[in-house]
Image (cartoon, rainbow, N blue to C red; front, side, top):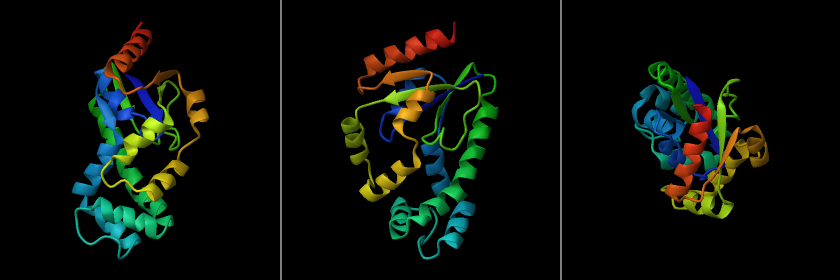
Length: 190
């Protein structure tokens, strides 16, 4: 199985590009969202570790944002509880798709969390800061304080580019991105 990991800044279009490959995709953001909606054990752990921040299950995004804004240490507490669960989901995904020729890993902190293996193919999604920021700003529950905190968790773009095997310039036009994805797949599958 060939693992292709997509990396880039927040809002660069990793999820958009991941779908263009046509192979099974593990989306860490979707995994986190599912955990908040369906995993009562995680809710109980968060409620215990950050009292008075979460009212009832399922976990609401507004409550997460408020907990982070109230005390920036809370983002580390939340991550320490949620990230191991995301890793479990990733392992289940890899086990389920072990016979697939290629899998796509859309994990925002892939390199930062040292999830990369020696033979992984890393694709850096490069988009203009202005376009990326506009995409992020339009998201439901966007909060500039939380956005800045999340950016601090990420490696510098220059480091991600250096570690990448391929770079896709994402101008958010499907035809252009699809051509670049096809070029990469052709090189990998030779």
